[in-house]
Image: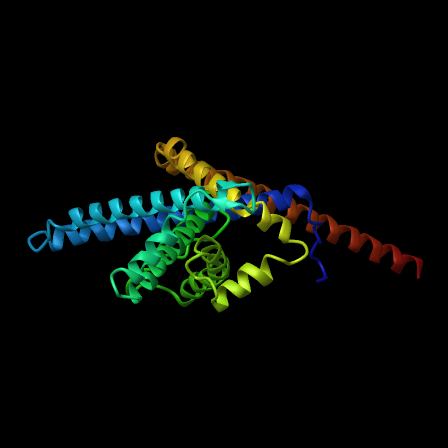
Length: 283
């Protein structure tokens, strides 16, 4: 402890204030990133409006339709192959769905690599969905700091953060795909590792047997869709005004806390000086 500096204990109010300040700062960074993106788009439109390609919106529309189809196929496959079984949970599924489609694509068309390409397409799409959902969830609840990936404007910490996020999602993605495509990848090393060794672990075998993780996945997907559609439509209109109020409130609290801290420091100094004078008089 430095002489003349009061040591203020970390109370719940100070911890709550620091947490609120961090959330407000993350929200401010999110708003700044959105403003910079809008500014870059506006500048690009003003500078390159003559060379603008009118097919770009149609390409994005086609990608959105393809994404919707992939999501719908994933949901149908999870329900028909992984959840609805007779008897439940280790019975025969009512439909093999994508497993049959991948096997047909590999055998009937005489192009074995086509099934691998389709499996990779569905797996990579699910990985992109996981990354996008993690970013949106973290930014909406201000848990994760914003780390945008921009061409020519990505910092090293943002690149490492997104890379670590990908590495965290990949093992769970591989395990989920081995369960979802168990009849297609039968007798492979991945099936032996994840469908035999991992599913028979002592603590997790109950969760895998009754598809607890699959139900959680579908529940989070439904809640995220409802929350995105219903609760976030008019949130951007109120964000800027609320953020200004928070910043002004934090400034006022910071000034008050600084005054209180300075008052405690002065009081401690005066107490120490009086104690020193009393000890000198006694001596």
